[in-house]
Length: 429
Image (cartoon, rainbow, N blue to C red):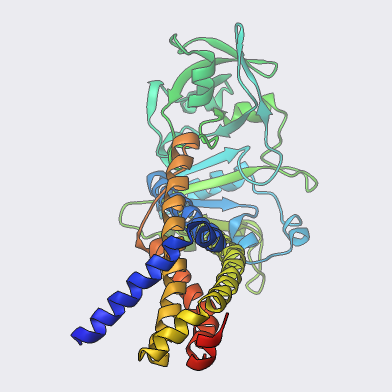
């Protein structure tokens, strides 16, 4: 065992010495391997960071929140035909009010006008000389902050009296708050949303986002849904079939009620309101946080697959380069092989020498690719705020791929070297 270990160490040192003696050629040889491993490690770190941040964001927004939409992720995830989806009836404010009155499993029911697929309202907000970019205007009930797990930073949320009287009051998200009132108190101030004047009654705190990125989660203004209908001329109670109304109904189960029970009752109520028979499928979607997570995981799975395919091409190119250079190396070192065989080296020892050279060469390339990939991940985080998460998997994948490339593409040159006739090799010029 000691002799074999010493032989292995001696062969490894010989391989490293050969690589070091041809530094430029070795570097150019493993360039494809470096690029492939760098892509795998760097992008995997960023994708893992996104996945963890997305999961944390969903958890902060409430794992039990249930959303009812005309169509959404559930339909797209199942591959439904969009031409069939747009034939579905609009959800209405009356649906939400009926659910609020009849549901026994739901503690809170809210309606979001301007959220989901359909005709969303986007407006700029103005105050004196300041103005915002285009922001989403949402029409909701007084339960919006509760179902969205938002905290009030200043002022109050609008109340039932504001809703019944259709008052022009608004609650600001963080983006319009910072744009219009960077250094002053906004409560009681009158701003303009489009052409209409609104009184600011409150400001909500920041919403959780993907790793701290500015993903637009705070780009909104919230007004009473009755005011939304009046100001923006939206018929949300009995819309025409041709209308494409953007409306989402949001519910939260009561304490002690499982989400499954709440979804079952919600589905029954909606089917009754839409007059669906037992053999007819739902003409609406019910989405939960789990569904969003599964959809995100499915998307990232395809991204991973594409990344592996692209990286494999670079690794394939790098492997062909390794094989070509090792073939040249065998030719250049024919006399050396002859001398070693004449001194007693066996075929397997020659085979191991050249195979180890290839594996060490690609292994060094894999290590460089891992280090550069880590650097790219951290650089992306520092420059753009993209979340990065590192674990052992990309490192294992990187070293495994690079070693496999060395073994697969180094085998042919190593076998060729081991089969050389020692007499012919010694005659080689």
